[in-house]
Structures are given as C-alpha cells and as structure tokens.
Image (cartoon, helix red, strand yellow):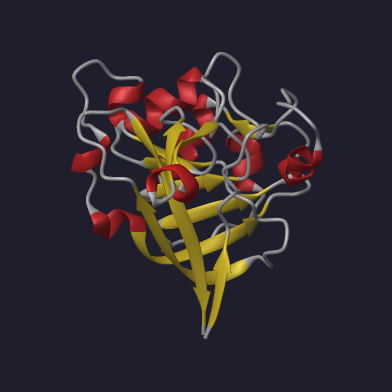
Length: 204
C-alpha cells in the first residue's frame, strides 16, 4: 500500500488567496523560559489545502463541521486535465473522458507549476459554471483541484448549491492519473465556511 500526501505545506510565505490573511506562526512559550514549547497559528479558513462548505457562497448554508465524512473519504479518480489551457468549461469536461461512476474527482491541471512561483498567481485553470454543471450530471460529490480555487463564482454556486464539496489547494504534481482512495480530513471547526485539511491518496 502506498500513501501519497497531496496537501501543500503550511508555512510562512505560502500562497494565499488575495485578501486572505497570510499564515503566521508565533512562539508563545519556550523550554528555556517556560519549561515547554508552544506556538500560536494565525491562518484563514481557506489556507493551503482546504475544503469549502455551502456557507462560503450561500447565506445560511451548511457549515464545514456538518459535512459528512463519507463524502470526504472513499474511492476517487485523479483526472489528467493538463491539456486544458484555462477554463474547465462544459466542452473541456466532455473531452476529459471522465469515469462514469466515480463520486470523487481530483483534477490534475497545469496549475501544479504555479506552486513553484514565489507568490500568489492568477492565471490558474478552473471551472466555469457550465463546467460545474457537467460534474453534477455525473453525480460527483467531491471535486478537487490543484490550486486555490475550484472555479469562478458561478462554479462555486453550482457545486455548493448542489452539496458538492470543493477540495482546493491540492498538490498533484507527482501523482499519476487513475484510481485511488481519498482520505480528506478537514479541521472540525464549528460554524465556518471552510477549513484547512490534510488530504491523502492511497494506492494498493
């Protein structure tokens, strides 16, 4: 069995969405002064690898602590979408040859190269509204992508309105397309619209 960590490292200076708080880590106790080490983390709910909950775009929507674990854990398929230049619209999705019965799809795109840049990039590949509608037609329950957004506002409304969980900020650079088992465990933060997550793929 092979375990593949597809989470991005959480560290000072990491990419964050424009306007989101940068990640900070502060030491609040030391062995020398207090007898133990302790640190304080300061980060946004959409830092690094994370999931969105409906509340992110839907007033009164479900919060991240209410998302069922059965949605976040189970068989998934990593899709080779590296040929898509910018938009994962309905036509692009139709050309990807998606498996018909997979409830969890992770899209490996040319976004992977963006992680090598020193700062946040805006020329990502992401879903449009009609591309998201194409996923609904396949009964997808979770859709992941390898940068900080699954798509535009329309795509978020389509997916979150239908209860599909966006898993954003993945690192799929060293992952071969194909079938895996996904384990995605977000922090159980009560009442928020998103939460950082540790995401792993398992290949037998």
